[in-house]
Image (cartoon, rainbow over all chains, first blue to last red):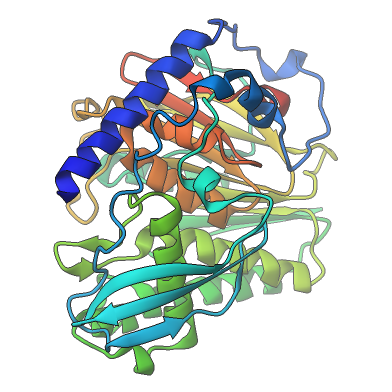
Length: 170
Length: 245
């Protein structure tokens, strides 16, 4: 059953993805070099996706089962003690999150949200009603001076190169 | 006046650069903090608390940090619809969250030491605060997943976290970045910009596990931006990325 739900979830996400791509106006951007881009003040909150969520709200709901299927996966190999545990409220920038976890037979059987930010209901967070608005471009090498590089934590060859590159700048 | 130091901790280079100071002491304090985190959460050290947890250490005997991290992992699993999962083959490995969490704590540590213009970069995950030496936001390059000597996007950040997830085999050390790119999911690099590195890192990890749908998940989160590179060199991104360029 879980696999079926997971499968539906994956299909749902692909449906959302294809809708999102189809509904957008494809915009091919020319990547610009750093030198001709004026510095901008950066706000921590972007309204990019929020502004566009209303445009596509008519498509909402079709994928609401996506991704939320598994609610009772164990995160332990039996090391938990049975009972219900209330977590402390954790600040998650958008508000406090507090959960309670029920353990039965050493496995997590239920997780309830005791606190969740009112401004962003759980359902929105997990399965957004908004159809994402996305842009596309073809990646192109940039000749720009950057202070920092973000990349995946590759092992082996890439790791050593990153290491060397980091050390060479140190 | 700046100071920049790199140390190898948790199996990766960690770099801290701070503007307006040349005092290494706060930076060394942060490196020591990362060493403590490694001793507690390393999946490779047999005597780490994490290894004890995996051998059956009861939750009541867990340290406060272990309880907190486990709770955060569970919350992340919930909000990601199950895509963030630290349980692999019966073994718990919260590494996908610990790094971002530790950087976030390290940021707070430096702020309490009075630093305001600095960044911490650990294995490609970044949080940048304040401004660089030229009084501009920090310029962060997104690495070309097809050629690690290149960058393909430059974003300018201040007070934000940037995390990139990609395909790799943890602990196996046989990953070939040239021939092994083509995963069934078609995503080779997924960069998330978030309000801090903890948020960016855990959601980058979760979104990458979603495959091509990951970009959608992030783009609908308030306060987050995403830049996803797919097999073939196509990038799909949230419009807010442009405001950071």
